[in-house]
Length: 390
Image (cartoon, rainbow, N blue to C red; front, side, top):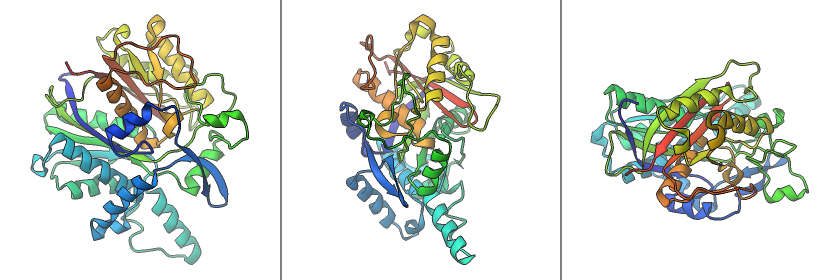
């Protein structure tokens, strides 16, 4: 990287709560946030917001008449973005850029309007403008009153970290001084769940003892896929240079795409991750990395291929491995930034957050550098190397 990038704020709304303090407290506990919820006529595992968190979203919805028709994915992003901007001390006159994406987008409204159309062969006036991909960033820009560039994109499950890559590119180019980046996802809808079940990667509700931890992310001995969806949004404020407010410094970034053999394919040793991690390392020695927050969605092939890629890149000095999906599920386009938040918390508190059902030979005694991985359908991998501020 030409110049260091400072992360001066990060905010999220997820099953962990609505603040970094909430998230850190919950990460100290071995419990997960999965519940058995009804989706139409079926019951499935899901990680949803608490009633108190949902009340925060209700207040956002009521704060402006124009917000009553917005999809939850947009409201989640509004909430997280307001808090991040406040943490960073930014003002609208700073004209910062915004890049917030989503994998699935306006799932709630899209399914509602599609049912409407199937029932009566027409739909509501707001069906199109409230379900477009650009919905999230444009409404956040309106809410925060910035006049900087606003960008939306969807790169499946690596969307949020691609937002970070894009924001860094704008800063490095000199075309912007500050960027708000992240992802938002509200996937707890019947059709979205049905799609994951059709792929045969979703966790089944069974009477087995594994229900203590129904998502077995990073368990390489599991015999079935255990991915579970969660909802959430997470955004970060980034600035060029080393800021005295920095929560973490982005020391390296990496990205890669695999040649597809199937719509959801990833190679046995995750070639895309090997290339993205090597690029993110740059001139850093592999033994400088204390931990990796993995993508690890809880699928047999996905978890194993990522571990194999890490072993290829790091060889005999493989860092401590962790993931948060056993606890809060897979939040699709928001997941990479929630993983980044977890990495920042570990750097701040100098404490590794383990997966409770994994037997670690040794836990790191310090946290100086942490790598974060994300990958989406199509083998779009991103790796970010974070460093603790001096």
